[in-house]
Amino acid sequence: MPSWLAHIARSLRDKYTPRASQHEIKEHWSDPASYSSAWSNRAAMAAQLAGSISSACDLGCGPRMILRDALPPSVRYVPCDRYAWTPETVVCDLTAGVPVAAIQDVDMTFALGVLEYLPDVQGFFRTIAPLAERFIFSYCSIDSGTERNRYWVNDLSGADVIDILHNVGYHAVDIQTHDSAQRVYSVRREHAPP
Image: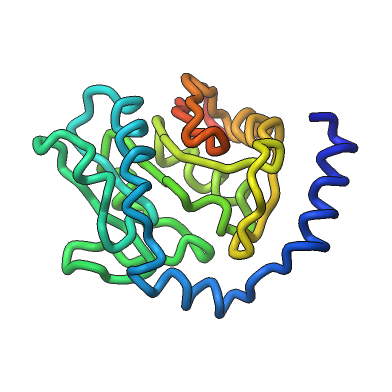
């Protein structure tokens, strides 16, 4: 999608889809009913993209920790979320920072269904890139043809995501489409971020 058309799409979405406040977003995600069991297909896709790993950090794991079920039982699983869903959950607010020790201590870091809710996606990637050599995440871009969720706080195109990845030193190894709109990216760090 040309950048001028992406800009028009963003403007129309902002005009006709009011954004939720930060308080509404926190309330929404504090309710376990807000987490869909249908996301297990996305988790299975991400687990398959990961290949053979021995440990995984799941940023934004949610109360069901769906990714854990998609990974082989031998994988050491580190759940991270804003809410302490279980005693082993590393509590972190990704809008304020990332759990550095949890990320540095695993083979693969995942963030599924998370980035749309972060106000500074590029800043998030700048923080993650030096910590996670391999990273799998999902993103529903504005050029995917899906309706905007009122809880999303950013609107990136697929090209924007690729540009951010390159700017922080990541290379997309594989990109799969989930549910015809959301992309699941498997990336590897090519070089240290600038």
